[in-house]
View (cartoon, one colour):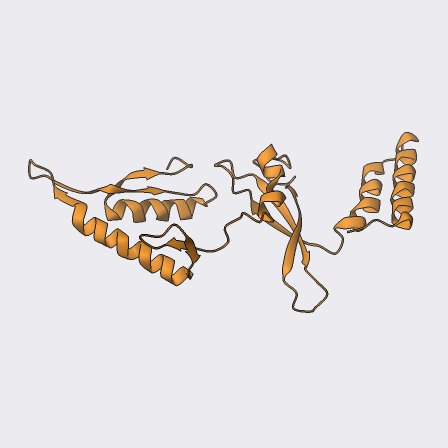
Length: 198
């Protein structure tokens, strides 16, 4: 988005006026400056609250998006990400990775759909989510049927599946984490790691 000379002068004048009012002891100088600057970039953007996906801290972020084009059915495009000052975990601050999340969101290297590499080839090809989930389910069932241990050598029922592990996500709610734990343990998987350390 380009900045015209007129827009630059308006923002500069708003900043000068706000700092002058603040220097004279009037309250609300910061709000006046923000009111002058905010329309410049994010006034027409849609604000969405979410959690940063990087680690188990799950800091709150504000995501701003705008339509990518002028058509009525234009898809929204994320234009800005910042820390959420109302979030109890991070109070608006972000680490270096969280602050750079707009960069990886728009990265050309970002994987946006499932990929599958057939046996004997070295190339990945795009597949549907249905194909990917069906394949994962089929392989899990085959492995569990082959490696499930119902009883140990002493005849005690253990119901273990030791050949497969599960790695959970970091930004789950308590309820989603609980359901993940119950699902994984119900299959017999013992190798379960989750950043929330359930």
